[in-house]
Length: 362
Image (cartoon, rainbow, N blue to C red; front, side):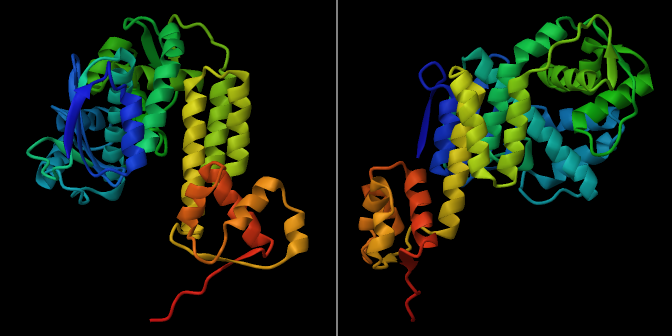
């Protein structure tokens, strides 16, 4: 299946959300006045990205940042020919290439989301042609959330760094473990002396938004000095989002949902919070399905006293466990949301009111 359209009728975040929810496999090609970008998906996972001149940009940034030989990186990318196989590079260098390619992709999608213009073409054709593909392994929902976060935080960054003539002075040396663009900036400032934002961007050869964000983060962490900046108040929402993201990575779904629900109540218009709350729920649902597959058939356990202690909505779910319906049928037939139905089934199983049916012998 192939289809195309423009972002005035189908906004990019909604398109990405649909592709993620559908676990699509194929290639998404987006174009706008400032450029174009291609993303290859495998069941909702980004496995490669391409853009005109992408190989040269990555090689130049890593060399100017003192992290790798640009020619070595370029040769490895050309030899790879856009496959999803590992690159012929040291593991730590390949990790830097993939990290920088992912950052470039997020920056491109953030730019495109911000301008709210452009067009797209989706195809399930597996042929990726001769484009400059770079292998990745990034969940599509991560791209969606990060690009929206970048769009929402851009006004604060541009208020702090409004002119390309502002000079950046490195106050610390680059260290392994730092984000790749930050390492490149710190190395460039040490190697070439103070650089204004415009020259720094041209030296590294990456997108302006990517450089501004990295400089802003370094400045906030007091690892660089920027002439003419005025100290900004920290964004409490951004801090809470980061704490919520840590809870999500630790699979503490209930705690993460409470954080984002509280933030949403305080500011229902914040798109970052809405998108992250939806992502928490999707991750929670996926986690529950891994432990209780949709095709699992559950048997009821007769315990009238325990059933009487349940809430009416929980008793309604318990009444649908009949030894014939599988989990997916119960979810579809129930009046609760998918997540709430699954959580109720887990509670019933924990209370001993339903039991997993033993697998059928061959």
